[in-house]
Amino acid sequence: MAKFVFVTGGVVSALGKGIASASLGNLLKARGLKVILQKFDPYLNVDPGTMSPFQHGEVFVLEDGAECDLDLGHYERFTDTNLAQINNLTSGRVYETILAKERKGEYLGRTVQVIPHVTDEIKRRIMLPVKDNPDVDVVITEIGGTVGDIESLPFLEAIRQFRLEHPLEDTVSVHLTLVPYIAAAGEMKTKPTQHSVRELRSIGIQPDFLFCRTDHHLGEDARRKIGLFCNLPVEHVFDGKDVTSIYEVPLNLHEQNFDRLICERLRLETPEPDLGPWRKMVGMILHPPETVKVAIVGKYIELRDAYKSIIEAFIHAGIPNRVGVEKVWIDSESLEGEDVGDRRLEEIFGGIHGILVPGGFGDRGIPGKVKAIRYARENGVPFFGICLGLQCAMIEIGRDLAGLEKAGSSEFEPATPHPVIHLMEMQKGIANLGGTMRLGAYPCSLREGSLAHQCYGLAEISERHRHRYEVNNEYRERFEAAGLVFSGTSPDDRLVEIIELPGHPFFLAVQFHPELKSRPGAPHPLFRAFVAAAIQHQEKSGPGGEVSAAG
Image 1: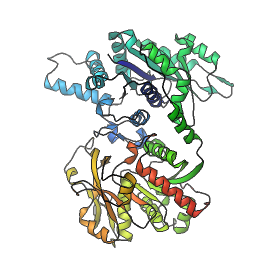
Image 2: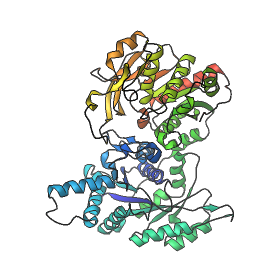
Image 3: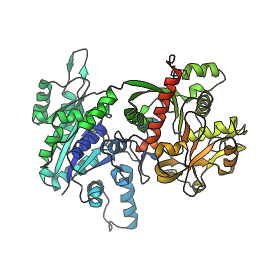
Image 4: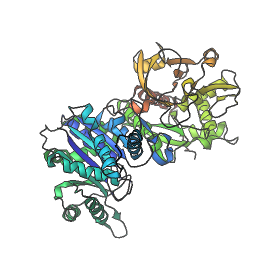
């Protein structure tokens, strides 16, 4: 029988439930256990695929094409596992399933209600990873939102029922709360945590462990007070002080015996974990010998979580290169306009050692991205384009090298005379936007001797996708004549996956999202190579001037 850990949060959102869940998974896996993580979100969207990055952050795509919450990226990175659709659930998907059954008459005339039908479906989803993987030892289920939200009540009620239906030693409740420090009073306040636990207990769930988030260390007196008023032994109250790197969290929890106490509570006999390699990795992240600057020219930079996997992929790539990657955020719209000429671009990018143009949707900020790519190409600055970044590179090269002055994308300019980027054939006629893009892992064949082939060291790779538009094959010969190399294509050669410019220090763009597969112990080869190229550019150019992060 598998064991189950439920992670909830209170007081405010964004406390780091995903990091805490991933860190626990990391520690339990280090103890030799097979661990599966799930994320249950209370919102009514079926998935986050149609949600704005400003509201939800990035959409993390799994191997099977599931569009998921970004916390699943943390789960995969911390536990080095590939997850699937069954590992993410929303209220929208719960109700979609129930209503489909009701329309088929599967409830035999009964009134369909939150209890038992909604809660039963949630409990069924909790068990799905175990049914598909009978050798799983521990299932960690994170509940999104905060205790007290109307939306999360069915999930919490399902957990209450689930714990009642299973032996005491088979389930554990971990609750994250905020312990704020009031500067004016010069002290920490435990009352928000007390109220959050009281709210959880009123639903019928007594937390077994408390993870207290704070920007100051939680003193022994505060821990005792929290334990007393929350009905917990003091050793089950954990200090979750802010850290420099999220990869420190497993180490901090282990130092407080969190993983050992969880195993004891679940009656799991495990050896002590060997965290030496993880400590060494964290040491390099915290104290890199050198630093390199990379500009991220995006359109959602107001919310950095929109590029969460890219941020993490740069951290990973810095480890084998023994550098810290300083990210300079540049709003692509700030590069637009006639007043942003070559001199202004030099001021912005003069101290930059690499330029990355990430993915996105819509026409906003496109001219700025194109201008940044032109600067990188003409000035020998390493360039890396992802998804929309590849499409913008095609537009820039089409206009400046291939003689297609009005090259564009039919996504932004339906009437463009040269649609070098156009809607994929399989996307034509699709009416529903949710879950209908080219999603998930697809194979890609690499041209021997190309930069991409050197980076991967493989003839064929598999990468995750999320797009509707593609390179227009009618223009491929024109671009090849201009010097562009299509170094990665689908095995049938119908879809362009990677482009590059020979003779440039590093000019490569991909249609897929390599950041989604990067792990701290296995940095993605393209990010690793891009950071290495940025280091070479730094050494070649010498000390740079001041970097202006426009916008």
